[in-house]
Length: 190
Image (tube, rainbow, N blue to C red; front, side, top):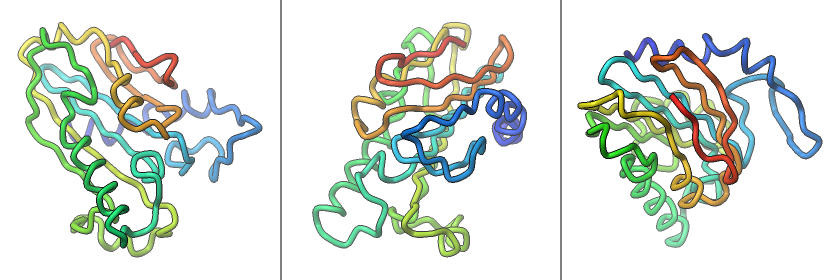
């Protein structure tokens, strides 16, 4: 399943490039790249395979905590802790239907801001600290995956108001699709 999720950006790359239209107010660092760091924009990869749902959220730290530098002040440390606490509750953030019976099987939260990012220390040191990202990976075991009709991100937009758009790439029983969700359009059907 992890291989499926990692392959997702490559499978949908033609779709993303075809839909990549520069807007005058955006400042994409890499035109057409799925990994471009753009404030206000996050990426979500979703893959449903049998009874397993995987969600992988990648966002500039600016969207989730309001800054990207190392947290030194108590106020900044509190913002990082609050964001981490919110990300630690994926069933609330992603509003999965109760009828699907999804339970969190695993979760990984990684960011240079968390201070305990052992897996990506070498990457983080080489990465421009002014462009810190937060990466969250969740795996759910769902008793009734056929009840997963949609993915609603309204709560994520509510809890992280600096997030303006989420570029979603989804692989599910009906194939693959990509969409750009916003506060006015928070849901994507499987």
